[in-house]
Image (cartoon, rainbow, N blue to C red; front, side, top):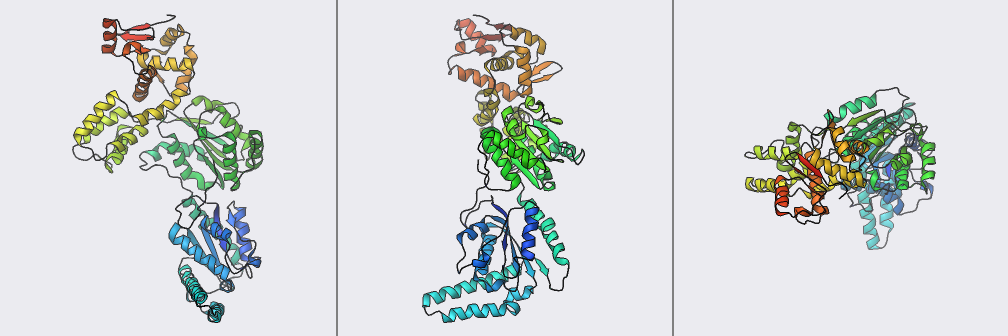
Length: 564
């Protein structure tokens, strides 16, 4: 996992950066004064600010390192001073900065330090002498091509100066005694923070229906507690419910309160050392980490985070080892820190030393939210097109409030006729959508063999039955059902309400797909479980059952083949 991926050319549309701020300035009159103080204030605040250390040894041509730094910075601050236009290097930087503003949408803040903005805009007054020298250099050039190139270069400088001076900026006059420190605080504390806040927003969802209402309770809880408390919350639920989406929405609403923050997305897909490196790099605002082992990573995380108030979101945890490597103990984090964990497995939120303060079970959408989300994906509006309302309600009923299913099926229905909709609904009854099944199946594949058997048996035979009664039956199959049922509940594969077993309709559908797939699509007589009335009667009538059949149900009569 790379921490940063930078734009490599000015035509790149990348929105990932290596620097928060690039400082363009004349070292002659501001390095050891205003610009130096501004750079120190930015780095003290935790921002990654690029400042050229070789400004006193600048040549005629701008270095490629500076070109890349400008492209890779979110914001460029130009400190216009009386000596700024003397330097062709500074002016070339300015041209590149304005190019990135137009082509890449970078933010630019001009600061007029002891210089009149109109002089920058018109290249007169304090800048007149500098440009007189630049023009003289053109006339002294004897080579026609070189002279034309220099003329074009000066023309670009003038254009960039005019455009930059027309931007909204800050003006510090010579008579503003004592205002310099206040101006730096304003730039760092308000302007840059607000700009970077909007740049740091995560993309939550194409159509964020019902998200804010789902996360407000969590945000309120995170905002409570003492200022020195480390608060940890867990968000859990079945696949496709939008746990990651909720975590992103929470991050966007509270991250501006934290100087140090990290969103570790989909941690189950990455190596532990890479995850540790990403966390440390995010907090220290470095492009590379020096972590070579998990133990080394734990040591660095403790050392760097214990004294800092941090916001860390650990998304899609599926193993305790991930928590042990990234957040093994709440005392790894400084006072005021907030830690958010998303997972499909509730048990991971109950670990010793890392037990969360509060757990939130994410639930499915209600009918109104589901209809709105589905409509946005299917019709591009918040309500179905004329003639599609009843068909839309059928799809919504099938999805059972699962956002993933609503999005996938909504997108698949775009610009289809009502007849095609009806055909698709009929198809779904026999052949579930592969994209939805794949996402749900992740949880099943993490189960051990007896847990898989319990899940498949419940889906086929025991929906709506008493949990303890079912456990006794399955214990007869040596499935250790009491702990197994508890594990399935914690992993959101089943629900237990009033001691009755249940599961989401799409999970039940997935289970039946797995049974037929595991049998390599032979006739039902060779499936491990038979639950459909017609298929059961056909197998019994035709005497086509085989030793592969482990259980079947017929009119509330359950037969489990134990020990055969």
